[in-house]
Image: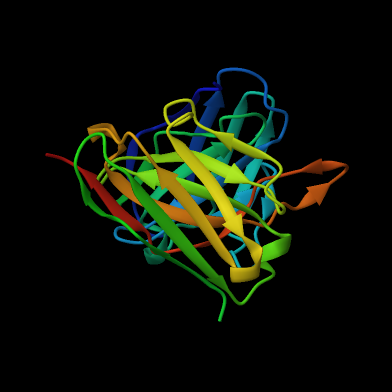
Length: 107
Length: 125
């Protein structure tokens, strides 16, 4: 199975900060990767698919990039609603695999 | 209203069985790939299984292959997960999700855009 490694596991940031989360695949996965946001007690929410395509309704401050093995989720200006845990998910092959998550906390 | 509602979770002894259901409404269920994802409380997400529109294509994570069976009834707009030979490590919150499957340049991507609220499965004696 493709292993997905996210970094950092957690980070502290302030409102207005630019935040970058990285996801690395154990093998090349082209651009077949998505990003999800999860808040405590809630189901995950799709942010990005195909590595860089913004899901409808998701604020433009979220962006994704990367191809092959290295991917990035960027929040250009962190907002209070963005404090959550973020997961990458590869859909290049089966079984699908998630990264271990990155918790974004208030500094 | 677009929604997915899971049910069927509960407490079961090791070796026992449960059948989870996921009722869909507000979207074209019969035209959608569907997925089960689970999460141990306080831990990360784990993809479990998926099924295509007519049930002819099914995939599982290795840890449940041979014990779990995903299925669907398009006439009832429902997705199922039959779980047999349950183990303590299957204890988790189980979510169903719709895969919108957007296609770009001949490639079809996963995009889990609709999620249920989850149903908790606890395997314990």
